[in-house]
Image 1 (cartoon, rainbow, N blue to C red):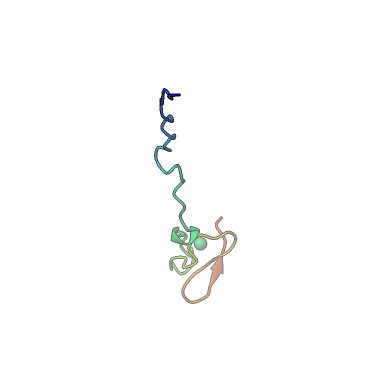
Image 2 (cartoon, rainbow, N blue to C red):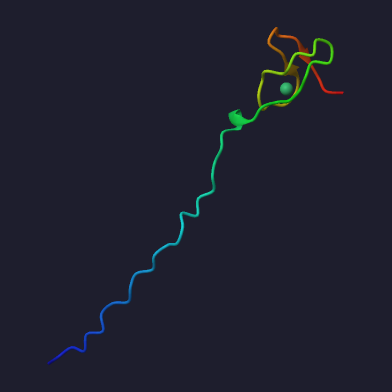
Length: 61
Ligand SMILES: [Zn+2]
């Protein structure tokens, strides 16, 4: 008895990695500037009050 070997079909190969590129939110910088002292915000990405290097806080608007 002989087998008409056709072999197995090739396994599917995933194309590409498909992974989204994750970035830390800490990479984002806040571009806020203290309206009274003109110092830039040092908090990076954040919500709420801005804060400059001397600890002064302010809100936009
Ligand atoms: Zn800020």
